[in-house]
Length: 224
Image (tube, rainbow, N blue to C red; front, side):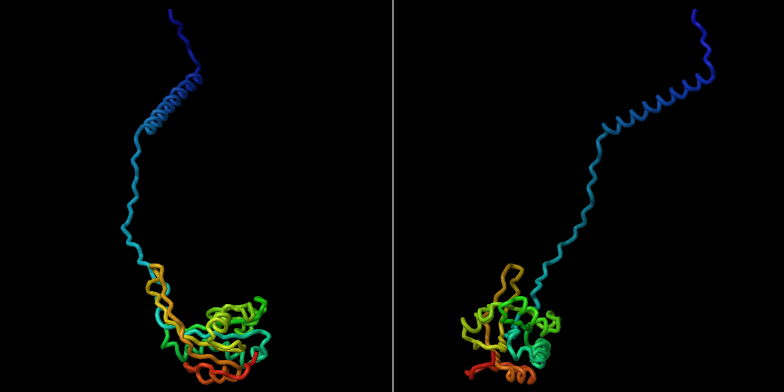
């Protein structure tokens, strides 16, 4: 004969809660299992057909005839430390662009300091430029004294200019930059336009609006 068990009210409530909780756990586990076994769809992002930007030749505007002035000087050259001379050299780039910029693809000024000590040469060119090197020179060549690369080229190898300081050498140079994107720039031979030695010649030439085709002839010993 079965026994009739009477449970107190609190025990019945605990039992009901446990039944509900266990049902919830079974339901959650079942859903989780379904999620794990269900195959997931691969999401493919939409790719816009954006055309590639065309490559740009950064040297396109440099194609054509270049005018290049080399200013050869040194910190121990007496002329170079004169205020008038330093001011004239500092303004040469601006004067050349004003006088000849319309006739050339590019006008450049290269500062050449013959100092053996590179630091002293840099400091001297900076003095000439009033610490605005980028506004005064497009390029600089410093050190080596009379074996400076620009001097070796113009004086010792090509015999285009005397071994003198101060000195200004101006050349024209045809350059074809159209093939840069395919890995080729064509640089033709230079033509000597101006070679000035001694402070008076340089100052007169700059004051006369920098005329071209003024090549130095044989002179007496220049200043150094």
